[in-house]
Image 1 (tube, rainbow, N blue to C red):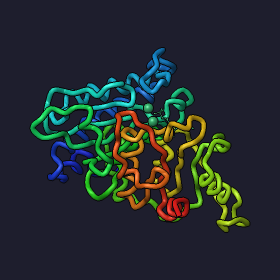
Image 2 (image 1 turned 60 degrees about the horizontal axis):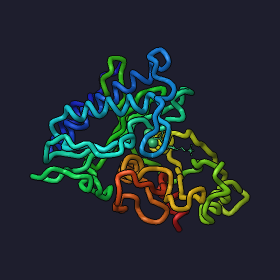
Image 3 (image 1 turned 135 degrees about the vertical axis):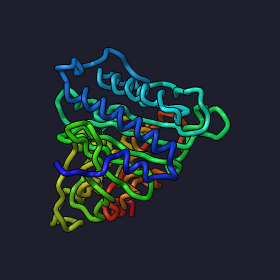
Image 4 (image 1 turned 45 degrees about the vertical axis):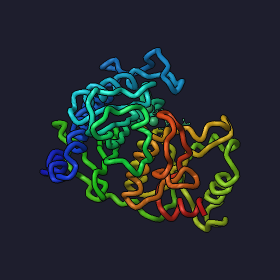
Length: 320
Ligand code: AHG
Ligand code: MN
Ligand code: MN
């Protein structure tokens, strides 16, 4: 095996970001623990439903609950964390500390893929906590542009941690001993792509601009776009975004008419904002359909949003 820099060494070099770096180490350790549970699957009795419904009115899987517990414990033990909020919990948890950071996370992304052994992941976002005062729920409601760091772990054929804590986006792969090793320096999303990701089964519910955009892709080289497209849809945002990080593409989960009052399916604070920071820092574009996702000011913790992100030229084509 080749000797590659560790996550600890990488973060130690980020001297300006000490509380963020310390928090990232706790999150990375938690992701390692979640990854071991994912790998055990049925042997560890980790598959199937937990028998409870979360605040999003979604049936929780055992792994949703376990991953949420693991992250909650890890962040509770981190001296830099003043509070955290999870997709799986109705209310933010305040640790009683002030200063430092706030963390938001989707403990297990891609829950419908757990029992069928398809890639799943964890998504996280780190925000500054208010200085010299105890945070409240409102303290978490900052536009994504304020994030100090963001990242995700993908539990796939390899366990990979992708994060941004400075201007660059980097990726670490877990080695056989569970140590995160720097394997991808300065990720860059290619500007051009011929690959799109959307749940086509919702086509009849889409708004006209999305319908027209996808129709153009489907026409291939004989149509308005003059080129052939390929389609991928994993059903785990984390895996779809990771593919785009590695080879480009466009991911769409737009507003649709199934529930017109709902701006989208994905959650702004736990999914859209952290992915938007990663994608922008890697040279891509992330919008809610019109505006940059990083400029959307949240009004509530579990707010949903439309998401279009990926290769700059392709997102630009849709937004034009
Ligand atoms: P979660 O498992 O955290 O609830 O998120 C699932 C999300 C996202 O990962 C994925 O892109 C999307 O739901 C898939 O939705 P559809 O089943 O509607 O395609
Ligand atoms: Mn999710
Ligand atoms: Mn989830």
